Each structure stands twice: as C-alpha cells, then as structure tokens.
Amino acid sequence: MKKKVVSLLVAAMTVASLTACGNSGSDAPAANPAPAPAESEPAPAPEPAESEAPAPAESEAESEAPAPAADGEVISVGFAQVGHESDWRAANTKNYQDTFSAANGYELSFVDCDNDHAVQIETVRGFIEQELDYICIAPIQSAGWDTVLQEAKDAGIPVLIVDRAVDADPSLYTTALGCDMVAEGEAAGNWLAEYLNGEDANILVIEGSVGASATLGRTEGFNNIVSQNANWKVLDSQSGDFTQAGGQEVMESFIKSYSDFNVVVCQNDNEAYGAMDAMDAAGITYGVDGDVTIISFDATHDGLQYTLDGKITCNVECNPLQAGFAAEVIQKLQAGEAVDAWTLVVDEAFVAPGITSNYAVTMSQEVLDGRAY
Ligand code: GYE
Image 1: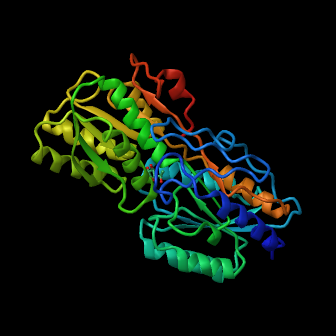
Image 2 (image 1 turned 45 degrees about the vertical axis):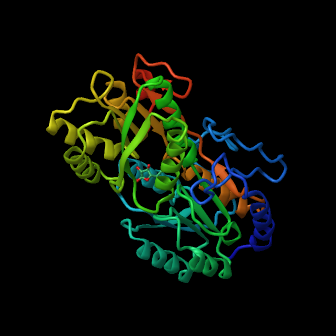
C-alpha cells in the first residue's frame, strides 16, 4: 500500500529536529538520543550528569499485542536486525516476530544481518527497492547511515530506528526508540560507588561490539562515574562482541595480563557467562562471597538467575520487548497521527540478595519468576 503519511512526517520530523538536541547529562547524542516529548507535552528538564535513569517519556516497555491494521490492509514491515549474538537479541527478535505477525495484520520481512554493517545497509536498500510500507533498523553500528537513510526518505518510506541509535541527522528518519545506554552505564557506576563505599577499584571492562551505541553509551556512562572516583582505575577495556565466546576469550587474556583486579564489568549477560567460565577455569572467585565483583547488563532471565545466586552482583536491565512501541508508532502513522521523535524504553537495575541500593532493586525469586525474557 502507499501511504498518506508523508506530509505528516514532515511535521513530525520538524518536532524531531527541534527536540533532539538535549540529552540526559552526556555529550554523546549518538549513543543517547534525548527523549523528545509528544508535540503537546512540555520539553523534559535536562538530567544532571550523575542522574539515575531518566524519567520515562513513555509507558512501560511490555505492551499488549497491537491492534490489527484498522482498514484490514496488510502492512509490510522490513526489520534489519543486528544478528543473533545474545539472549537479549533472541528475545528481541521473537518479540518482533510475534508482534508483526500475519494475525496482527502485518507482513514482516525479517533479516538477521549477522553483525555485518555492510549487509545491514544492503538489507535496508533491498527493503526500499521492494517498496515496503515501513522499515525498522536495529543499527549494528551507529556511524555510516546518512546515505541509505536519505534513500529511504527520498522513497517516502518511514524508518524506525530501534534498540540502538544512529549517528545521523534525526530529520533522516521518522522516529527512534530504545533504552538510554548512557544512563545504564551511569547506573552501574553509581551502584558500584555505593557498594564499594570508598574502597579502591581495579576494573576490567568487557565491552560490547565496537561502534554499537549500546557499547558507546554504556562505556561513556560508566566512565562518567569512574572519573568521579579518584581511587578507581580501569586497567583495561576490550570488546567481547556481546557474545559468550567473546566474553570468555577477553577474560582469559585479562587473566594472563592482570593479577590484581576486583571488578569486572561485562556489557551484556552473555559476556558475563563467558567471563565466569574463564574465572572458574583460573580458580578466581567472584560474586558476593568472592574476590571479584561482576557487573552485567541486560538482566535477561538467566542473567538474573546468576544475580539471585549472588554470582553477578549487579545487573542493569535493558528491556528487549520493544516491538509493541514500534507497532504503536506504525499504527499512529497509519491513522495519520503525529508520532514522538523518541520513545524511551524504561529499565531498572537489580542487585544480589542481601544488598540494598538506591540505584537497584534487590533480587528475589518473585522478580525472576516475573521475567518474560
Ligand atoms: O545489550 C546485547 C545485544 O543493543 C541493547 O545488544 C542491545 C544489546 C544488548 O547484543 O545483549
């Protein structure tokens, strides 16, 4: 079907370009696009640098299944997904496939881009050639998007940037949605400062994939807090590519190079599983009763099981159930309504039992039982 949304998009994009200049206390908008209000709402006050997660612009992440297309017409949606690197990604993919189902009135063209930026660009080009109604992109890396986004814009196809952010002018796409990665990194750092209570920290960081906004944002946010603690030292920071094998490999090499560390930050749960395997093999103890404190991100079901078990001491959530937001945007555009430039998916942090924190929820079996991913 062809759209009646083009003129509406011009209005929405104007809002986007007017409102997307602030951010929640960092200076890296690519990794942390500022939450933009709906047209009718006042702009949110900027967050201080050491803030906790910013106030949500939108509702809870877990949304109901979307209503089928109002006019009964099938809506074609292309989704250029990052790949299949992690449990988080698997949950995110399933959520898109469930949400953009035929029963809900969609025809989803799903492409797993296997963490290859060039493949992802060509995938988007293919969606443009097929004249799909909407394109969702979960960007593998934040840079290098201007040309293909311009092509989509020229073709009049609305683009939703989902999960991760792009380093491109917001006028080139319709809307963006996802978690605030800088705030996640700051939450991890703030929790650590509270937990260590003045103790020295010798920190090793296993980063996510190079150039991904999730990596850039979590690194930046955590470093914001490192710089406030004179007795913290980041000994090394290397990419584990958001995979278990990558986390294990990086941790093994860290163990060879460093003998005196007491904190390991893993930028997702799968990397943490690999890091724990490497420490087990080397006889290094970790967790609330061990020598090394592990911080992780994602807070997937298995990651939170390790948190409940006291192995991962703090786990900062990033909710992968985001497809409902994308469907909501598409339904609004279908109805000729304006959409927000940015939708924040809200998340929180969790800590092992026995720990209380101003920055995180203490883990319990109930929390784990309620975890859908
Ligand atoms: O943390 C990681 C995944 O972009 C937020 O990508 C996402 C990250 C998530 O591979 O597990």
